[in-house]
Length: 286
Length: 187
View 1 (cartoon, each protein chain N blue to C red):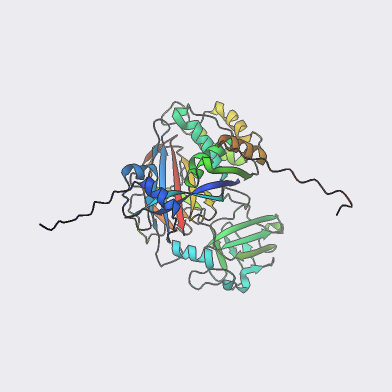
View 2 (view 1 turned 45 degrees about the horizontal axis):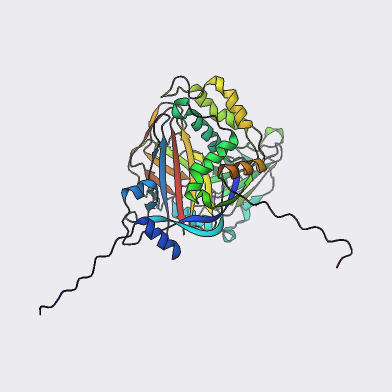
């Protein structure tokens, strides 16, 4: 009798829905930190075009303070161990302030990335203005911020620059530099079609008009889940704009702040006045 | 505005097993997303469990939703009130990424109310810009007062909670009554 070859029956493929039900019964978290983005376009006439989730490029350049890994490390781990003597100062004559700088006596740390990304809270006695700024860079004596924020604004609106009595910014300014980092909560768009790379530090030709300016995203996180989301609505208010790239930022002003994620739109949409684009970012932090 | 939506189930993402090949429909629907290695996929998994989705809605997204609703459908769209815009933002753009509506248990809201100056500043460009797909401006000047009134319609945090419970069809149970105070002198 010839030997019989026993072949195993091919495994039946499960569908995504079946596999998801099985995974829900045996859930094992996956370790990784990365981002995806989703672009939905709502033309003011016609059907919405709902985009799929796409991988969001994580920046990793080693020069300067712009990439996701540095931001995340500092935000999660850089606490009181990095404190320094000039982290706070009461109101003194030598502290001066402008719309984007605070100048104090020497002593701010400058090694490595210095104080980039930290938050500085400032109080001005004369006009009772209490604001905070994101430090973009610093020297030994000067902190450069993106703006002075109104801490009560959910849109990250600018507050009033603190001043002193007599309109002279030489007395009555107190400040405190906090540990940690200002969150990367702003979403921005560009019409530039250059392919992004992980070494990028800015969004080239970032849009700042026609309803597409950088804005703070709506944030959400489910307790104990591995992701959080940022989302934003942009409605075109003029012209015709093709959206080619998007980015996530840690400061309010264009071309500034840490940029942890950036991507190209695979099917760049063109929006005209009245059309709406929504950008949703999901970041996995497991 | 800050929100907290208490849920009895929520979404997580796990790697697609080797025997599962996502289809174009899976990708287009958002049931899967690229993994950390972009040549693989994670799939969305509904988990059971008591938890809470918390977050903050920026005021310009609330106003932006009102702008979008007005400009939509060739300006045959709707004038939403601020509380309706908040419900739309949560229901359309935020919560679908976190939990299914059927798992909502109850909502908590902290809201400081509308910001008229911010509304006027954000609306201004749309009063000036021509709508590309319908006659007239993106927002017609004669509709501005109605839009402003809709935005400024009073609604406290409790009012938002009631509206969101109705919008999401949440049958939130009332908090149990406080126990009566023990009589004086009782042990």
